[in-house]
Image (cartoon, rainbow, N blue to C red; front, side):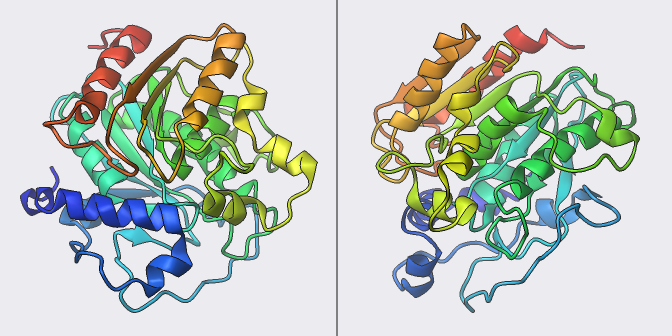
Length: 330
């Protein structure tokens, strides 16, 4: 599905994306020593798109931010109209997957945590929806709620289209990466938060994922464990304690939190592995189904990961785990 040429230079892209997530936008914009990244993949531009909010999002205040002239277009910014890109399998297994890319809440990394994930999971029969969500630091009012509004709506839109795309509405899982992992964890624990007035029949549908994968996720939004750039972009420079608590997903795990799959590299210098351990302990305390894979190496932002290293096997492990929690499908 993805362009064959995108498989080359994987380590260089991963290094760039990891550095971008780890250092933040300002540092990356000034850096001169990153490898050249590929252009927007054809698989992405050719994919069908579904707007989340056809009449405009429920929160106002978008203000586009200047983009450096050398900024890679696969790291999407200035998202006024969030959407789902749809990737269909040759033969459906009756299930769907929402992929939530990361990017420090500063951009959305649509290649390594979007197109590449869709390629791997459509090969297994999943209909994959990649979310481009609004970024909280682009002028929006109620900035800390904006990404979760979009993630909730994405789950509902996916379920509303189940018959159209040939999967079961109750067999929709999700996977989130880095800051997208924070958004995924927020969705898993806050799927029923009321963040806007219902607009249509879609808003009456369930936003709870049937299962949730979290890959090198940001969980904590407080120092020293958090990823500082992600927390600042989401909450602002001086968030009040109540807001910090509300956007700390491990504090909101309940008996309704869906089964969770965690994958993290121990040598991750951008988002410490303690983030996954915090979520693990919260899920254990609530007696929720949980699987955890900690890899010796892999760093941050590895996406599918290299096939010749253990971290490159997480998607196979994830697929086997989904088989147990979603059933065998068709």
